[in-house]
Image 1: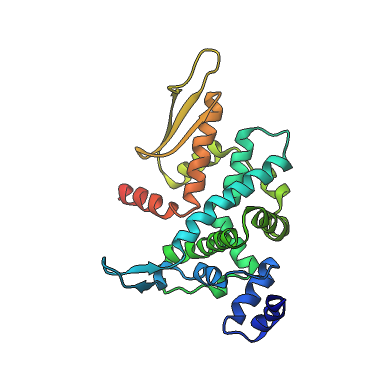
Image 2: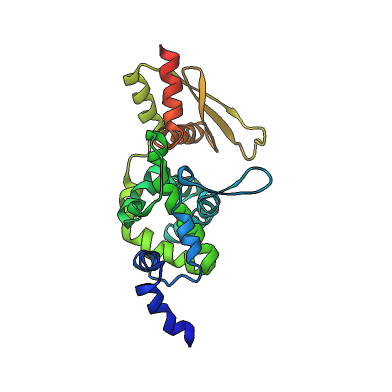
Length: 260
């Protein structure tokens, strides 16, 4: 009874009232452990160090981000499995990759209104591009630890995926990644080739091909499939995700340096 009475008091007058309000507005729940959600908003650039024998333990959202990443991928996988009962594993993998890509998570973080609450001292452009998606994953990690998998599953689906993602748009976008990658390389004056052959686990009854997308002699994407075409498409898809995600800056820098 006392807890029921204290909830609205803490939310309105407590020292952490802005965090209680934020979590309620974003996810429609009352936190059991508000400290988890406060921690989820602290980027590593703003780490607080707790002294220990090794010189100090950084307090930031990286561990929660690691956990939230795994939880989000599990929830999205289940959601797509149920939404598309007639589609194959390759299709589900590609759509999931689009949803959990850093670019997508950054956009979701902004749409939720979470970005303005992140505590960060990051000044670099690359770090700045990733901290929003990182914070969203950390908040999901906090939700999981605070409420358990079943609750966080419903919250992610009902308050994030269904509200802010258009599955029709995601699944009807161009999927010929190989052609798009070749076109990009031609326009950017980079060479591209595919090394494709049978995978080590392939048999005559169940052939499996493995392909490597090689741009300017650098291996940038790998893919497997039941045909050469499918393997090369998956390798191209991996490159397309990398070039639009956090590793894209490094890949593009390597390519540019090689061209000089």
